Image 1 (tube, rainbow, N blue to C red):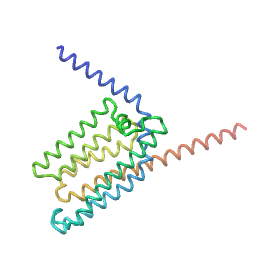
Image 2 (cartoon, rainbow, N blue to C red):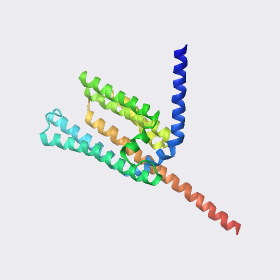
Image 3 (tube, rainbow, N blue to C red):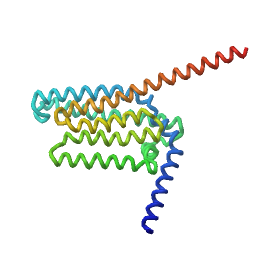
Image 4 (cartoon, rainbow, N blue to C red):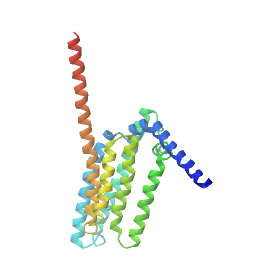
Amino acid sequence: MDDMNEELDMLKRDINSIKSAIKKNNPMLRELLAPADYKVMCLVYGLFSAVLGIAIQFLVWKYGSFGALPQAWRAAFWLSFAFIIAGSAFYKFSIYRKRAREVGTPKSLWGIIKLLNTGAFLHIYLSALSLIIGFTIVFFVSGTPWLSVSAWAIGVGLILAPLGVIAAIPEYLVMGYWYMATGFAISIVIGVAPYMLAGIEFGVGLLLFALFTTIHERGLKKRNAGKGSGRTQGGRDGR
């Protein structure tokens, strides 16, 4: 009974931690994760990822396997992959630093990481990363490494969807559910064309983010324009 009461107390503390963290960091998170800052990046890297995946898949079909590709093609693939990872990371951190200066949040890398992983938020990331790493190891050991694409997609989705709820930014929610849904769906056929499906899955997710951000921005502009014209009309009527 005492153990159960202790567990209940711990659960209550975790819930209170989540509530206080959301209340404290929501405005900061919204600023740091503002979709408009990442629209161009998502558009560029989304198209690049999809094209890269399709191109490599056709080369694999032509030569029989990835290992059979000429060394130059394999080097080009890994350089392109590194460009996507390193380039997007550098871009995002540059935006974080810029936004941090504007809203007065920590500007160091460690300070931003702590803000994005405050308190109970950390459990979301750790759970998803554990899933990704664990299933990736299992799939490689079992001789089905292509299934790790699904594990990564689902894991990333499990991070983005809660982040969209916590920060109240629907674009992250849409991208998160896209990755989770397609991660499960392509696991059935991923072995047929792993590079193509991976490129399309992650690329389209980024493109959806850019698309929904554009739609959201246009909707806001229309609403603001409507409010502005309403105020102007009201002023004229007052005269």
